[in-house]
Length: 346
Image (cartoon, rainbow, N blue to C red; front, side, top):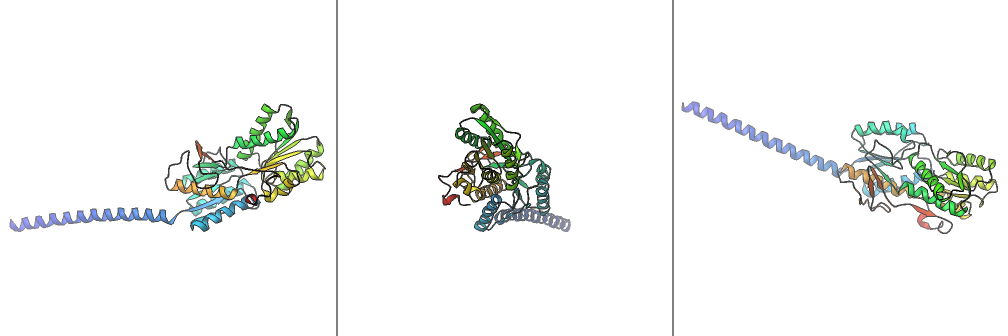
């Protein structure tokens, strides 16, 4: 009996010991997992920034911001995209990023329709998706805008309408008929015209320029040749107003047609200086690139995304939020009076 009791006691102690070891092992494994998560977070994420195209000054400026961010932080952030504006090519770039298993994709869509399916696939793969200039997209975590798109579009027509005395026909240009932000700008602009300047009217349909200065030049020249009485032109893509300005100059209409729109000083500054373009407006693509990356990191880190979010970038210090869209206050107007300001020399 005594031997049996001792054997039972020893067996019980062994079971207890194994259970205790198992508990300790479990705790150790949990600690290791927590440590791994902390290390993963400390090591940072792989974040890709995909512009509409890499070949134009606007997005080359965005690349500057991405590279600055990577250099300043040492994080694995990189810039990649198609060399030309093509929704299918941009979708293929994103397909490649999905296969690389990046943590986040920050994208400026050339065609929102082309990207919806592949961005859905990215999100299903656990990749955070941040868009810019695409407030109406569905398959994203968040969209970040430099400003309220309708207000931005309205201010062009208010400037144009006042300059031409509220009378005459005008042209509206967009980079693509599928470009969400461009169409928001010109649609809001036309709304202001109909409300405030009833004696003005749009000439023809929206001109699609494919974000190409030569296309803008050809199409605007054709329109101005057909109707030299056109009084105003509003461009949306970065190169639109530069192409329109060259066409106006060649036809002897410089100063006779009011040209306003989105561009950069490096592209259109000379036309602003000589008065062919009245006003260009823009936001700094380098800062927009950094803002997208920071927003992606906040999402990856599980931070709360809400109105008042401060990304610590100029114009993005106090974002407002509506659904998935975060809006800053980052647009800049440049006319002959401030075109030589060094702060805008890009």
